[in-house]
Length: 561
Ligand code: ATP
Ligand code: MG
Image (cartoon, rainbow, N blue to C red; front, side):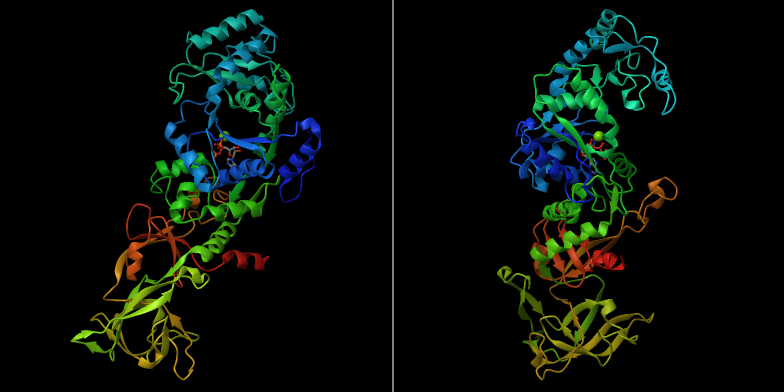
């Protein structure tokens, strides 16, 4: 198995796997793993890794398992692990029964002993600072630790006592004995174990020494039968170490290989658990599932369909070039998917009363008519719903202008417009309050235009959404803007928080909705005509989050070039 040259786009891992399968040396088998650390919730970047790991296994009839990289007791929690499995399933992949690096602590311990016995690892009693200084730097020599050549028997004894808890945290470490002059810093006697008395969410207090990521990863891959171990580009330098450990252990397993691909970064947001955790901890957002966050929980609450996230990941491919993708590209996949599946509804975000003076009365009350309105013109199978119409409707305040500016074709005094699916109406006069604000528009309707069609074919330039005032239900609607104003948060000052958008959420508490919106299933997404796609909050009734607007900004960005 070899690393081929990078493909410029597409899926270079698939090319590698194809070549390996053709070459029988690979064993003809494909197995991958997705290795999250359970120290936070998954974000859109992880979706790319999940799509790559599970996608490659699917594509080649192989296996992919989840392996929790739970080697750091201080920050990891069972709750995060459970949430990660849920999010993987939500994305549309079967997480199966997860494995854990901690399942292998005992094996890792005995393999470490075997390295010590062969003079390939030693216990170092220097503190962290001295170890770091001794490493030197690129182009600068490393200085061997005074403990580097201590007898194996002594290291073995100390390592055993590290495990039994004889020494305080941080007092000594186990290091691999590789090459203190290597150009690659990772090979300058990397740390394999540190002493840490943290309560581990699975192994409890059974251990007070924990393996490092590097010492645990390749061996865990080998134990599980992983053939292609994919990680992000910052691990390129770790690959020689990954290989060194496997080369120096006598493992009865097929040899796994590490491959690196580009991290996913998006404009106007951050994809780092540490940064996201800070936004949550400081209350900048409401929690890990705040709809403004790029966490999978946030995106789900915002109404992003998992299919759209998968099709975005497929479109960007698995490449070796770090690039920041426009968030509008992701939104465009969301819009395409929702256009197909979301039912259409009418809601008015900034209501203005439109009173129809010639509307008929029945038995002393304004008549109520019910219209059949298509749920989704893109999909006739979605059928129709009934929408009530009566003598007072709410229209969008911005759809009316007392003095219309040039090119304003919506409602103004003397102008006729179409109320979608209902009638043609002509505004007559405005009613203002003492402060001169428009509180109501009076109008007449053409009874012969039922369904919104001009009987004589006369031209009507605007079609507007509306909601019958007597039947309207009041909802809270959250409109979102980018969480960070800058395309690359932190580019100016080095601190992404400096670029936080103070207006990333606008709450409208008195949106007026057609009655069926009260029955929107929690978590489902509908289109508010002309306004965008909106997700019903999973927990709070009559709270809607705008998922995306209807405008395809991505097409515009591409057209700009
Ligand atoms: P973060 O910096 O957000 O904490 P991480 O790499 O520490 O990310 P892990 O839980 O260790 O988070 O990641 C699990 C897997 O997901 C790893 O294989 C990692 O390479 C991959 N991954 C993490 N972030 C991204 C990203 N932005 N793009 C692509 N893959 C990612
Ligand atoms: Mg990590």
